[in-house]
Amino acid sequence: MSYAIDPAKHLGAEIQRIAEEQIGKAEKSLKGAGEEPHEAIHDARKRLKKLRGLVRLIRPEMEDFYKAQNVLFRDTAKKLSGMRDKAALVEAMQKLEERFADEIETDAFGPVNTKLIADRDAEIKSGTKDAPRRIEETLHALKKARCAFRRCRFDKAKYKPKRDAKIAAAGLEKTYGRARKALKIARKSRDTEDLHELRKRIKYHWAHLRLLKALWPDGFEPAIETAKRIADDLGDDHDLAVMRAEMQSAPDSLGGEGDLSIIVALIDRRQAELREGALDAAGILLAEKPEAIAARIERLYRLAARRSTRPSVLPPMEPAAKLRVAKA
Image 1 (cartoon, one colour):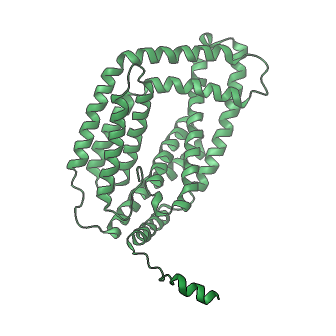
Image 2 (tube, helix red, strand yellow):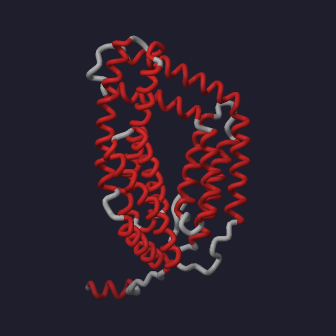
């Protein structure tokens, strides 16, 4: 099931399986990086984020294990972030230009795009030289994580869906509750960093919805899509905020004052759109109280486990000859 827990199996075994898969995929990308490693590094970062989401799900049950692995995955991903951060600014400007293409008659974006692309390419060149060291460090961290998951003393008792349901529900409840708190703060302040914090909390909730999708695939899919859209929109908002700050701190390197004033105005408009849309969607996604969604997750987990282990009982088929006689 890849990045999804099978409720018909022991939760500890499923956590270890998923961790093994994500670690293995990250290792495969990094070992095959070649001379242009940025795509492999980007893939490894995504795997590390998935692993952080995974250990958060069992945090209430295994706090010490969570803390150790979360720090390992966080610090490892941070070392790989440089090239991707510069590329994100290029993408942010391209999206902004596309959004307002029908309204802009001047080439205001030209100098900015030229500078951003040059910065990205320089970072890629610099990062490529340093990539072997960073890849080696990441592979070492992944090896440590694999050993930690294999050594971790998950409850080895026989499969107990009621126990597993409580653990999964408690993990999601904690992350969901923190997302609701972040939403309350971001709604009030509209501050860039508060919105960025909301994005992080939404992404963890998104990871948990994906991990638990098998509980109710048709019911979870809309929430998964909504969480992904919110995270993407708030990510675009943060990239634009970084770009705006850079324009204010070093305007001479990014073009003339007139062109920059146009772009800043467009950034403000686009950020307003992204923020209002994301906050409205987050209000719907996080409408339930934490204890209510936890109770729902626990019930769904137990029902899904029961469905998965219950033998199928179908009425016996009538022989073909009898069917023909009855029809006649």
